[in-house]
Amino acid sequence: MKLSRKNGLRASAIGALVVSGALVLSACGSDNNTETPAKEGGTKTSNAASNIACEGAKGKLLAAGSSAQRNAMDLWVKNFQAACEGVEINYQGIGSGGGITKFNQGQVAFAGSDSALKEEEVAESQKICKGGKGINLPMVGGPIAIAYKLDGVDNLVLDASTIAKIFDNKITKWNDPAIAKLNPGAKLPDSTIQAFHRSDESGTTQNLGKYLSTAAPADWKHDPKSKSWPAEGGQAANGSSGVATAVKDTEGSISYMELSYATANKSSTVSINTGAAAPVAASSENASKAIAAAKVKGTGSDLALSLDYKTKAEGAYPIVLVTYEIACDKGNKAETLPTLKAFLNYTASEEGQKVLTDAGYAPIPAEIAAKVRAIVPTLS
Image (cartoon, rainbow, N blue to C red):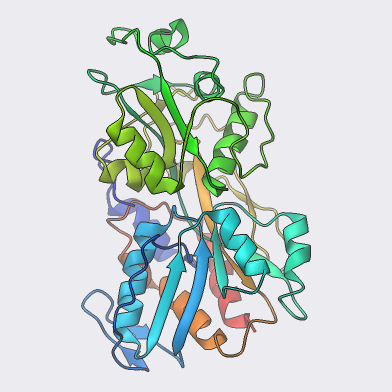
């Protein structure tokens, strides 16, 4: 994720992530995977990452899931393959739901997901993870931006209630009184709002639903656990790139996406009125402030987190997601386990974290990151 063009994030936010000792960062890569020729095994170097320990990594590692991590994965995969001879990391950005399905069918070594496994998904994983189960390892957080295209309106402010009503087709005009009240002086047109949502099963959709259900329960009565879009109306597009392109190309449009997609398309993003002294912009730094309040709700090796979507802390951006690495704690395939652990060790390393400085991701709290670092070597 690149930094928001308006919010000017700097390395300080990611610095906390590096100091934390690093997260296990996920397997959420590009929809268009590249297979870069590798160099040599052992501890080798590349221009971007000088100390990658390959540690027996070899062959191809297949993964699938969330597209929200695509920009980070492009960097990690490129560096890891350049350093480790004969290794290919092939990640399909098909959405969190699709990635979990493939993982539980034994088709991939790990899945990237913007939401933790459900109880029934954990139970299903036991068929694949012989003697173990699928676990959630938080990797990196980030803001879910509400991106829009509206000529002449550059600093739009919305709150949870208006966002809920827009995506639930209850507010359909840009000059609706609820929007006008939050944006005094803005020249809001009397035009129809073109709301786009994800057509695929998406952890980003689920996290938006959790936020709306928590922060605006009277206005968003849909299932907050659904990865599929639950509301009627609106227009659908596939993947993060699909909704981002739709907003870029459509006047009067609005959608939700991981911040880097909005930034890459130079789309305007909404600031959220949370009840704090000032509206909060979508930025990595502001997302970090919200994620800092996260609590571990998982047990044992499972590090699923509970986020505070109702935060009113100054400068805390409330619409956030935490991406997870979904892997077996026990029962990983012997032929891919060394590569899996080496890759996660790289992304969790200080060297791996440094490549994220300009990618706009938000750090996981230090104490949680330390737990992730301790768990990765125990995967078996």
